Image (cartoon, one colour):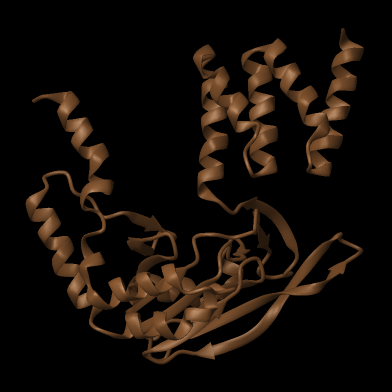
Length: 306
């Protein structure tokens, strides 16, 4: 076996054959409309998205993927894992939206769900504007939680509360706003299938994680997976003492997300004290006030040590 060629072919697959279902005429028309029509919100095209999801798109897309499996030895579905019992298949990624299909198997989830939302570790706010289209959901109930507009001054954070409980029917559409809503399936009546269509761009940098019983904020996590992967890369090369990665960490210090910038500086300091100090000193002028203040304090501590 030619290992180099095999690895190269696997790496090239997402670019060469992943978008097999873009040949669908309705999808093609929608992407063209999105590319040429001025709009202010992802939700401006809710009707168009609903028409796509309720049409024959999926009966068209699945045979296309079957064909890809038959033609390419190493073809794989892009998988979005949303827990032990829920698996998502990311069918389409475009500049304008991401389409992922999720399926619940009632037998494996019902006993888990019957114990209520307190059985879940956290309620997470969505990171991107999202439309949920329920192709098969008759009799299921979705709880929608909403972040308060006002700050809880005692806890210095925004609280979350139950906004509504939606009795789902086949063909139901639910709108979720980035950084504002979280959901929990309270009842799953039968095996369920739904499609998540989300905007790829978002101003939300972190996801709020709320205790399902007290409904108080317990943690925040990175909203953008690419940002968390950038942080993981920085930590890995620092632990490996990989000096050739210094230039990459310096580049990450200009990342759009402030926590990636700070993470890059800390790991660069671990990898190379001099280069790391220079970068931390540079971040004393960072536009994010938390990064700026922390960098200034670090510089003071480093000066005191030396």
